[in-house]
Each structure stands twice: as structure tokens, then as C-alpha cells.
Image 1: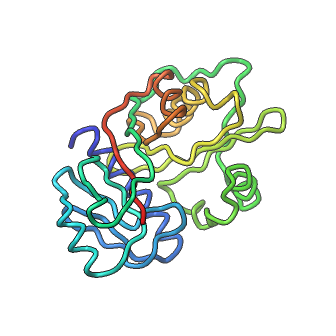
Image 2: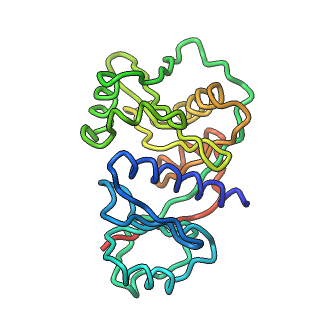
Length: 226
């Protein structure tokens, strides 16, 4: 698999995990991964799983049920032809396992969310109070990270899949939402999951901050809605 393929498959594993939390069945096919019922909020109903996926593959899926959101993992499809509008464009990103795990003296420590109370605090700070269910904490392949400094809360989620660690749901108050945040995410994730590359996707200023912190952009993606 290419680096982009690894990021795509890891993201599919994460979306599948969230769907499992909500009891939403999903059906992977050769070119597409999709849900058999509406996906949870903020998550796609359909994801292109390979660079060979076509608009016709999506059209065939649409004969089985309507979908509201699609992640074009390789930014190759013109979904406007099927009545979709482009929500945003982003870049898959990757970071090799961090060799330097030493945090600076004044850097707040990351902790792993271990109970419902901590998860509720994390979710409130992330402005998604009802999205992440407590059952998420029972999964061995997912860890929810939290840190606090001067009353401010930062967080992210790491999921293991496709031979990589996926980083998602990153949030932090300014000015921490810059390169130092992404450096610390790489260190914390590599400390828990050594030898695995880190992947994810971002756009805008967050993408710029990640790249300044040593993350590499490895390919474009697009998210479409209707």
C-alpha cells in the first residue's frame, strides 16, 4: 500500500469504529466503504476505499439508498454530477514514529481518558458533548487523549488500524493550536504506539501547523455533501 492508502484504510477503520458505537451497520466493498443507514453526525455515509473508485461506483451505491455525505479519499471524483456540493478539501498527513519522546519542561502532560467523567469533560471541551459514547473507552484500538493547562483543555483521538495510528478530533485553545501542539501529539502517540507511523487529515491553518511540526502532506481528499 502507498502512504495515502494506509491513511485511507486507517480512517475507514476509525469511521467503522464510530458506526459500531451507534449500531450503524456498514458494508465494505472493493472500491467503497459505506454505511447501511445514516452515519453518526459529522461522519460520512460513503468513503472511496481505493484510487480506482469511480463516479459510477458511487452511482450504483446510490441505487441502494440515499447518502448525505461522501469522503473522496483521493480527490478524483466530480460529485457535482450526482447532486453533491463540495464541503471542503484537505490533505492526508503522515508523521514517522517520533524518535524524541522528551517533552519540554513546561509542556503540559497528556493523559489517557479512563472513565465517563473524563470523557464528558473531553467532549464538552471539543464541543461534541453527545458524540463519543462511553463504550469507546472499552476498545483496545482507540485511545482518547486529554491535557489541561491553566484551565484550558486540549485533546485528540488515536486509533490503530492498517498498520498506523490515526490522529483525529484534534482540538486546543490558541495559541497551543500550532506546531508545538502537533509536535506533542506525535510524541504522545509514539510513546504509546511505538514503531507505527501516524496519519490523519487536516486543512487550513491546522494543516499549516502540522506541516511546520514535521508532518508531511501525502495526498488530497475532498468531502462532499448534499
